[in-house]
Image 1 (cartoon, chains in turn red, cyan):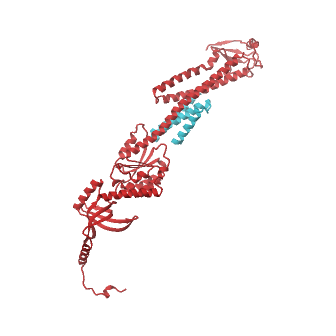
Image 2 (image 1 turned 90 degrees about the horizontal axis):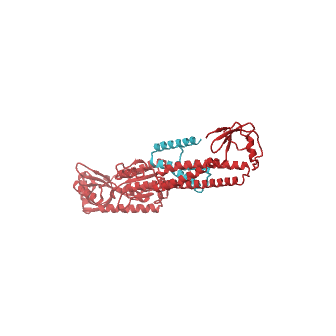
Length: 470
Length: 74
């Protein structure tokens, strides 16, 4: 290849410094004194000694850098801009912000080209953020993922909480306190997944924390983003499209308590539910648990009522049984003795079941009574006492009182004559006292006619009767 | 301890209630069903308020009780 020197003789030879001087002159002549430039601050290094701020300015298109230039803000200017930024945006001038700057191009023989910043328009940055937020929201709607997390079923009792925030984040302490001091004494298992909630690394850090939660999704009921207070700029990370998308597709319901009084950040819109403050999230959680317990309390109440009416019905059935027994006896004692025995045994087993249910029910009532209003308690106590008295009336002892007796052989009630043989000793229990007798004759025909009545008593003749005192 | 979650507990509880309220259970089973329902209620309320170890302790105590009851009945 032929090099240019071979063809064109150099007319004038410049030193490097002279070249730099030419460039500086050309730039000064060719460009306006001041320029308004929009760029994103990719890096901001503050020289703490001199107070000068050194910037890396970039322009991005779809996350790719398409232009890049150094920027500088001299100490005095930087102090003024910083103050203005704090006042109007509530935060530090920092990397990641898109800014509208007024400045001029300067060329230095040693340091090269840079943009010297003379002023920054804060409202542009704020407007840009609001615009970007709107655009992100529109994009999420368009892609159909903005309501995706909202379609998940919410857990019946949100008790195991994965919290993504910084331990020192504003509002996190209030959130914990509100959960701990809930008036019902519910406990919450809170696991913190630490993340930066502002600054350059915040987005990456939040995404990483979220993916850690995803890895343990079975350990949690919900995931919660917390960040109290803060300026629009501070909360800007919660407008991130990437974070919003991850949250939308998260397998657990996402709650967000990102505090900003005016506009809610994108994550609040994407979440299962967004709240203005972290404490509002805590109150929502306590409320959800309370809703569940109310259902349980309702069940306890219905159990008492249901059990009561059940026992009421059962004792009514028992009373009917008693009536049938009585009318059977009234019918001239003509029904077969076996029917009587069957009735008696049915009566006995029903009575036992009823007593057993009554006992469990009583125990349950005792446990629940403490929690219920006194008026209700008294009403129940009365009806219960009434039930108990009525149940007592049905005790077999009261049957004996009417002149019936029970005959035992080896401790078993004798229901059929075939278990007896002449010579066996039986015990007969009366309402008061009992006696032992020896069987002298068996009548297999169980019919008991009034005429035979006296004969029967003779046949089961009492020999060597021993009277037992009850 | 049996593995159970709130949803299962509530569903079982509601089923028992329905049975009792419709008087579908036999009086002999009533005691058992009421006891089970009481257990479920207590289980939920204990778990809402205690840490896991505490819940286990509470439930262990509750499991001892029915045994005593059945001994008393015998």
